[in-house]
Length: 144
Image 1 (cartoon, helix red, strand yellow):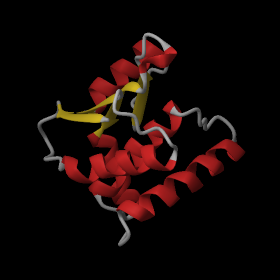
Image 2 (cartoon, one colour):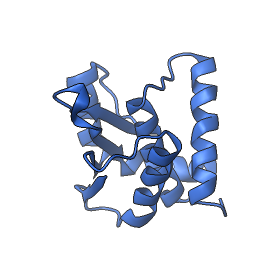
Image 3 (cartoon, one colour):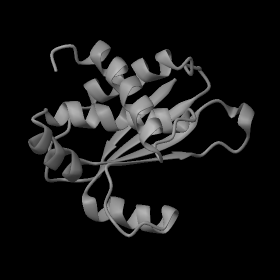
Image 4 (tube, one colour):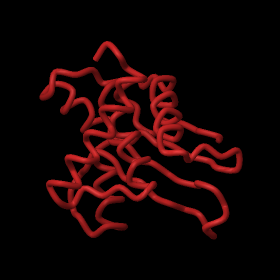
């Protein structure tokens, strides 16, 4: 599967290698690896993610990650865009005493989980999703 990473914000340098590893680990854990698929990951600031969140989901606020399934047909393989706020990742890294890399990987995995059918609207769903995210991240970021 092709994974493309683009950094559209200029304030913070982002290292894409751990994020790609996290995405690959999530795809493997979920049985979604396919040579036909493509995932594009975009790093943006809060202003951009707020605009996208408002436009596509009707939520007029910044968020950590947005995941869009852009397949035209179900047989196309996974074709998706994941948009991650670096501003939010930096804030949350301070709040939760994690690294920026950890937060960016977490958001990428969270996006993949959403694309594979996981949801986080209820407490039980959030717990299930968090547990799966932690399992995947332990394989990629064992020291955190």
